[in-house]
Length: 134
Image 1 (spheres, helix red, strand yellow):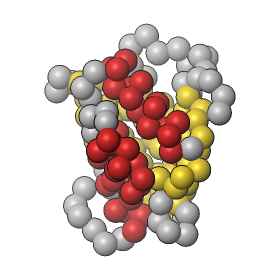
Image 2: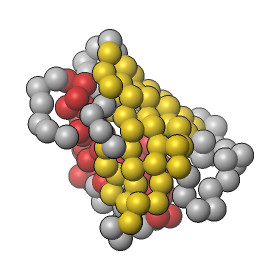
Image 3: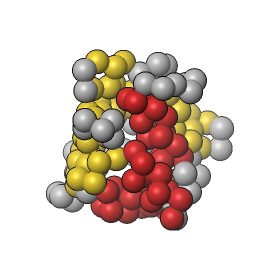
Image 4: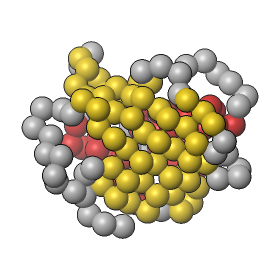
C-alpha cells in the first residue's frame, strides 16, 4: 500500500501496522490512533469490545502465533464509511492464512468495527470454536 491522505486508507495502513507491531506501549499508542475507544472486533475466534480489550487480544495473538506479518492482498475496497481489506498472514516468510476484514469508520476516520472472515484458515483451525463474548 502507498501512503495516502484519504483518512480511511490511512486508518487501514495503521490497522495493518497495529497487527504487525510488537506488544507494548507503542502498539497501544498506535491502537489509540487507529481505533475508536469503543471499537467492536468480531472474528470466528474472538468477540471483543473496546480498545483495551482489542490490545489485549493482539497480545494474545502474538503470544500464540509468534512473530507474524499481516499484509494486504490488494488495494482495499472503500465506500461510504466501510472498507473491505483482504489480508494474508506470514510467519518465517511463509503464508499460513488468509482472510477478509470488513471495517467501518466513525466520523473522525477511526476504525469503529471490524468483522473478520477467514478465507484460508491455518492448519488446525476449528471454525466452530468461538472466542469469549464481549
